[in-house]
Each structure stands twice: as C-alpha cells, then as structure tokens.
Image (cartoon, rainbow, N blue to C red):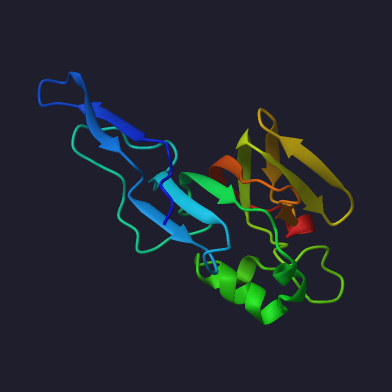
Length: 188
C-alpha cells in the first residue's frame, strides 16, 4: 500500500487542561477500494455528533473498516487518491459497482444502472461534502454536465448524484470534509 505522504496531527488536553499533541503519524486506516488500481481512502478523523464533544480523554470513535458517509449527525475528513482511470471501468456492471460501494458500507449509494449512468461510479449520499483538490485534476460528472477541477479548486457537493473521473495521466488527491445531512422530501 502506498504511503500517504502526509501526517495526521491530533491535539488534545492534558490533565492540567493544557493543549498538547496527542497523536502524530500517518492516518491509521487506509484502504484500496476495489483493487490496487482503484482509489485509495485515507481516513483522517470522524465525529459522532454536531456539535462535536471536546473533552480531555476522548479520541476518534472506533469504526470497523472504511465507511463512505459520516456517522449519523457526525462528520468525517478523509483524503482520497484517484489514480488515472483505466478502460476497465467502462465494463463495470451495476452489480460490480454496488459491490465496490459495499466495501465502504454504501451499496445504497451507487446509481450506476448500466444504461443511463454517465459513469460507473455515479453515486449519491445524504451529505454535504467539501472537496478540496490538493494535487492533479479530475472531472466531476453530474446527471447533466461536468466540470474539470484542479489543485486549489474546491467543490461543494450538496447531496447530488455524481461521479469522479480522472482522465489525466497522473494521480489526483482530494481532501473531503463530509457532514451528515437530510434530504428535503422533494429531492429524496
């Protein structure tokens, strides 16, 4: 597995209430989605509620595996490396796409139907996502339209159906801040 080439530095409070560094190292949970040619998820931190509880002794809540969406009423920050897209994605069936999303606890999110989908990884979550492109470029595909974004750009994803396509020849790295949300009935 590739090294993330970034550190996760976590702060907290000691018994006297002073600010201290509690953790300094690579993100503890890293996973390829699909296979080694798929995106790599680096889980940085999550919270279980908003507002988040700030105390002296708590650490990141325990989770088994990688979860696409944040916890209910919570938040998540992750970094994703999107490698250049290969031709194999063109042949990904709807069942295979759902299986890839199931790897991150989100089989329900896949909207690839094999007929009208604009990308094999089209999906939708009930979240607000801030995507900060750190390096490279990637194309954001919507039901209607698409836009290519590059390092320094920020995408505000508002519970919309979308897919990410790296059509370049090099890696694209995005930091995502995910906030649990709730659909209005008219768009649910």
